[in-house]
Length: 88
Image (tube, rainbow, N blue to C red; front, side, top):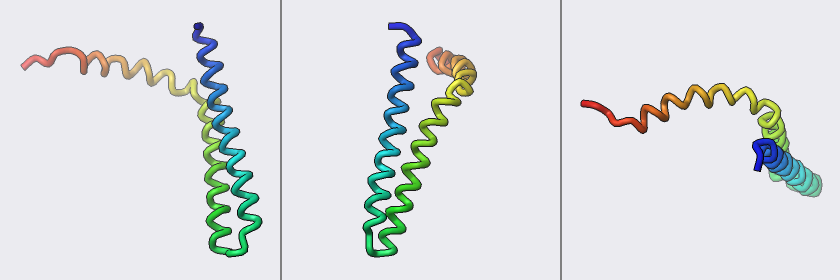
C-alpha cells in the first residue's frame, strides 16, 4: 500500500464524514420546519448550524492538513526525550 493510497482513503473518509454532517443538517432542517413549538424549533435550527459547521471544519481540515506536517517533525525530539532514560 502506497502513501498516496492512504491519503486517498483518508480524504475519502473525511469527505464521507462531511457529507454525513450535511445529510444530518438537512434531516434536522426538515424536522425544524415541521416543529410547531418555537423554542424547540430554535433548538433544531441550532443543531442544523452545528452540523453545517462540523461539515465545514472537516472540509477545511482536509484542505489545510499540510500546514500541520511541519509540527510533526518538531515533535520527534520530544518523543526521543521521553524514550531515553533519565539520568539522576
